[in-house]
Length: 363
Image (cartoon, rainbow, N blue to C red; front, side, top):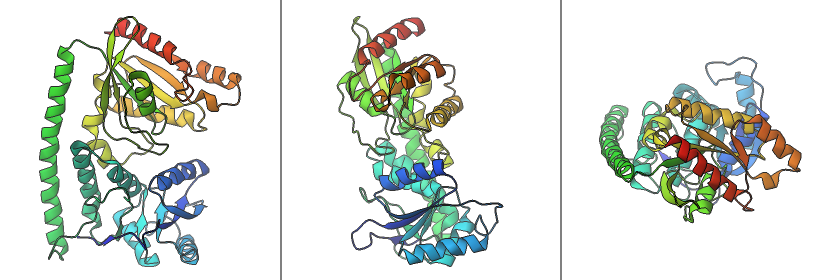
């Protein structure tokens, strides 16, 4: 199996980040900080024409490698995807582990997986990513949990043996996930027999979904100001003032260009949204990329077949806006929207009332 590089001197790994734009760089920094990387530099580069060997010209590639060596970086992280051959070329040039966007997100998911279902899904995504990259210098960034990422089996040295073993593991995991999916379907049918409407909270990662679930239901879902704080769908009862009860489900956060292996692996979790009677689409009103994040979530809902489900666009974190005119501007821009602050308990009762009204119409 590919070599697994362990924590270096028990300190945060020093990472040189490479991005193609300021917006992408901001998100890349957030992803890197989620894995507690020590960012030694964030390089924003302009690629005039993609080259097959490195995804850019060899001159620019050499410049980045020299920068990494000068700053004594332990790894190089890109905000775009690299083909297996490009990743090998970068590692041969730099003699450092090189991570692309896919691997970075997969390792974040690996560090966040707590339940059996999430762990199985992450393992499957890891193996699909690893299969064509058996000579890649894996580096373990999942500091909160060990996991199986890049582990080496005893006596396994030949690529063909490795490939066959990974394919067997993939088949085994797919069978296990199939069983877990069936259990989730049974649980969903049991909830449906209760005759209670379901409201799903969806949105870009770190918009405040879990915080909203906690505030509305008194749940104790883990909350942290980092990307992908929670991976599992969590359902709690929401008691409304008119006596009605709604099942409120928090789902895994969305992100631009989510790796295909994770979309496939987490489909059973994400599909909770497609079975809802109402969707709460939560946005961070203070985020400069709110428009792009809104469209990302709309696109994912469309892929899941949930685009036609009635929705409320919830503009969270309005306490971070400079003045009320900014709030009014956002409310006029997004249809069926309302503004709240979970942190400051602003308009949460109004949101509950709106949920009650929408549920009556759509259940």
